[in-house]
Length: 244
Ligand SMILES: Nc1ncnc2c1ncn2[C@@H]1O[C@H](COP(=O)(O)OP(=O)(O)OP(=O)(O)O)[C@@H](O)[C@H]1O
Image (cartoon, rainbow, N blue to C red; front, side):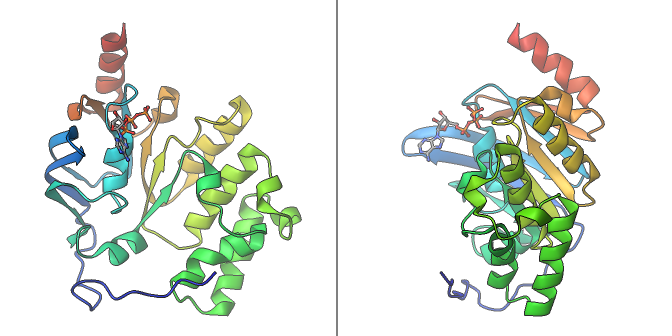
């Protein structure tokens, strides 16, 4: 399958402000008549941001707002000055997204084809795509599986493939939505290490609180609001105490 490029509202690639971060301005979101986020105003500039909170508190919705997968019903989200409502294509080039379930992300039959898919969509030249695919296969121990059906990989390998597929598009930031929830302990640790070693800025939504050691900032989402915002040392014990 090939995607045809659709011109965005506003047409030309808009001018960004590199380094401005992700700016949420009085953001609210509703599904039908149900409010799942409201009054969220904050700017993310840190290298590593964690997002925690109870089931149904609005974390996934928050994560999806950051690269335009979800558009806010009120307020706005700007990524390096680019509005996710009107400049989604440019936003997605900057912010990659890794889903909880890698099967939601793997679209091509073989591992190598899947890795090539994102950069192909971006119009990256074939030689450069081949180089990136090799790099990702090597880096994530998938070289032996290059021509294997992606759906036959183990759960841990699939999650690595999903991460590698996003990295092949060279985003500056990556949002992870519960990337270890479906993994066993060994693969959870492996994916945690992979996230830890990334040079990109990351936002990680997780119920695995130990993933957040060493993070710069952790947000606690509660009933659609950011109820706490600080270092892991400040917010994680606060959250754990709230759960007691
Ligand atoms: N597409 C949708 N349509 C309608 N309601 C939705 C949709 N997506 C999420 N919701 C509802 O919005 C609320 C917040 O969901 P969200 O997935 O953002 O929470 P979460 O904190 O990520 O939860 P979890 O930890 O269980 O993944 C939930 O009540 C959920 O049922």
